[in-house]
Image 1 (tube, helix red, strand yellow):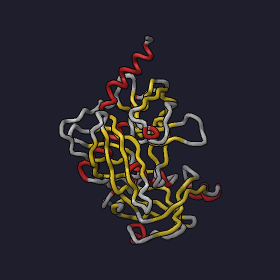
Image 2: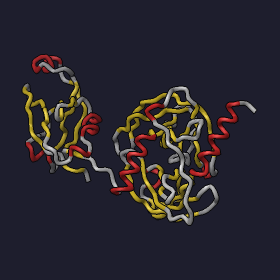
Image 3: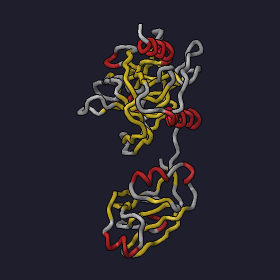
Image 4: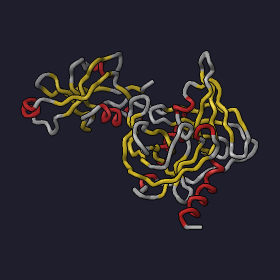
Length: 305
């Protein structure tokens, strides 16, 4: 048997005991049955899966590769990164996988996707890492950075399962495929997965800051860029202001945000990235363009509910 086949089989053998099937019953008149895959995170029964797999589920069941079935509860859910953590009460310690450092993933390296496509339990597909550093927009509209692109085949039901290397180490959690395209599949990087999962287990949620504004990207006219001596012709225009920190500080519709606390804001995604947990309750300077002037407004971002 060739070395490639040996590597695939060894990796699959190492990680398969940590892969589970997730079955859900949705809250609807027809009680729709769905589901996907998951990955054992702690020996005490914490399971990582995709938020979109379990979001809105009335009942969640987890099936181990031994055939054992457990009722699961949601410990924490973060649709912004498409990561959710479930909890089961196993009768014995569970086998957990090894995680790789996703910042060291290389284009061209072997990648295996393991999951339960179409309800078929513990299916393995093989490919390579096609690209790294991709950005993927989740169902909430936020971007996840550092996403891994692979050509390892994913199908409905693979969501929430692991993408692993030839040693069986977890590179990421498979999350999506672009249906019109051929072979474009994506995984949330393992470093992001672990950070989010740890916080969900500890706090039940991910804390983020917000300003209370709805914004849209815009390109500034050359004469305004020249007059204000700006380094960029991009900014974020305030489309509406709700009750919140920005409105309280005097931000109005039509203002153009170009920086927050000294960090340039060229897109709405920049603003989302800067408004992390550390900004909650911290006084920041919001640089905006109003007319042909740059105005600096002190603002204290609050926690996003």
